[in-house]
Structures are given as C-alpha cells and as structure tokens.
Image 1 (cartoon, one colour):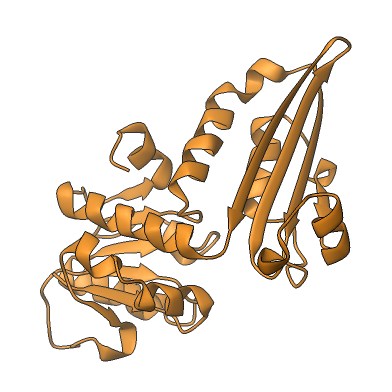
Image 2 (image 1 turned 135 degrees about the vertical axis):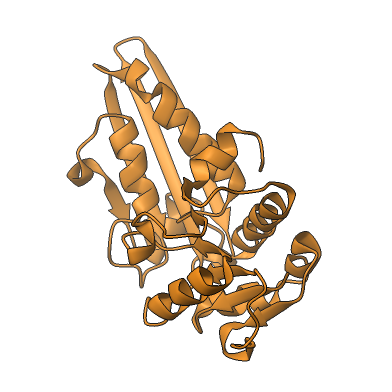
Length: 227
C-alpha cells in the first residue's frame, strides 16, 4: 500500500518532506502526480490541496477502494462516501484534538460563567480559524465572541509568541470566571512539525485497523484510542 499526497501547497510539501511519514504508514509516500493510474491496489490518499484535484482523488479511491484522508473542512469529501472509507481531520495535531474533544464533551459544564476566548495566528491569516470556532461552540460562545490577534508586535509583547514563530503559530487562550474563581486554559502550537507528526499517527492508525466504507471524523479515532 502506498501513500499519495494530493496538493502542491505548504502542507502538502511539508508532508512529502516529513521523514517519519513513510515509516508510520509502512509504505512509500508519493506526490499525487507520481501515482500509477493503472494501479488498482488500495492506497491511502491524503488530500492536502485546495480542492481542484479532489474529485479525481475521490474517483481514484472509488476505483481502487482506497482510504481518503481529508485535511480540509467543507469539501465534497464531507459527503457520505461511496464504496471507500473517508477520514475527515481538519486538525492533525493530536494533542490539540484531544484538548478540543475534552472541551466538546465537557464545555456545557461552564454554562453561565463569564468566558473569554482569544486566538492568534500568523498575520496573513485573515479569517477566524476553524479550531477557534469549534472551541467557541463547545463553550457556548458565538463565533463573533472570539478575539483575534494578528499584529506581530502585540503577539510578541502581550502573548509572548517567540519571534521565530510569528510567521507560523496557533495560539488559543480561554478564561472562565465567576466572582471568586478564575480558570485559564491555553494552547500553543509552533511551526509545522506537529501537523506532520499527527498525520503520521493517523496513517499508522489506518494501517492498524480495518476501516468500514463510511466517513470517520478524527474525533472517533481519538475516542477509540487509535491515536
């Protein structure tokens, strides 16, 4: 079984260059353009692209009964698959996934408390990231309640983001308060390696378990203790 990386952007390039990916999958890791279109043996197809090649990847998986790993949200891969497994994982940092799963299952316990949520990412990221939106929903906050920070000076001075990581980081800060008590939860992700490491663990889990022909959210892998 081979691993095919679909996409030409930053994440796809990082995955192709990650030394541990092939070892985790116990298989060669190849760019989508190097696939053997006449080979009908099952593979693991990792979609890390913009979506232009997604329909081709879906057709390939249908023909070869391959596993499709979708690293984006809101794509056609979120629809029920036809004849092959789909693993949807918009966040591949395993520790963050477990933290978010904890919020999702326990966030309702903080209903009625004052809650503040701040997120920070590199300056060129203009939208509110899906991770922050998911955290807000778990805590019962509106999406518009999330405070976003994109000013590098503020990130360095107030949030203590190291200068070498201003160009690539993900920071989330949650404060839950009542009149006499305050609880602070904070996450920091620097660089790209946590995402490649997470994909490697997901690939290892796919190799270790026989998946059904259906859609799996990565949360199910977390709940089952597969990653």
